[in-house]
Image 1 (cartoon, rainbow, N blue to C red):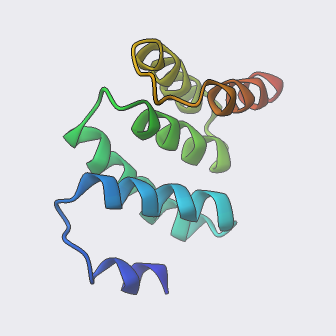
Image 2 (cartoon, helix red, strand yellow):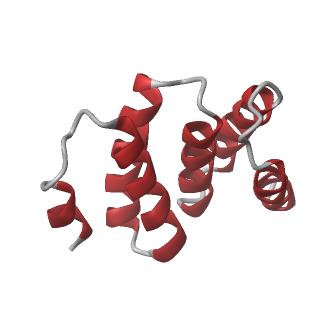
Image 3 (spheres, rainbow, N blue to C red):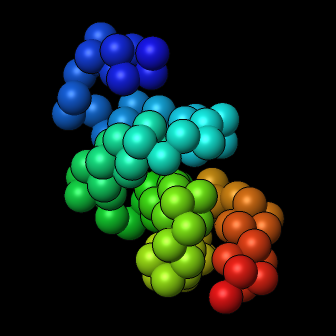
Length: 104
């Protein structure tokens, strides 16, 4: 259903892509849908690689897919860019960082 929902929105809007990918990540356990969401998140990241939430979303998706090395790369980037972004949710970043560390 979410993939059909996506067709109603402009494909070039990176915030919608990112938000949809993050929502799927938080609510879905099906690998094929998580992989589709990873494509959306990748497009969002290409549009704005300095957005902490874009990097967080990539980290969260890789974590959910079991790729902790990639998850660690993106959560590190999210932490790095969050330093200069007053809107960043540092607690959210730190919680995912701890989960990724546990699964090393």
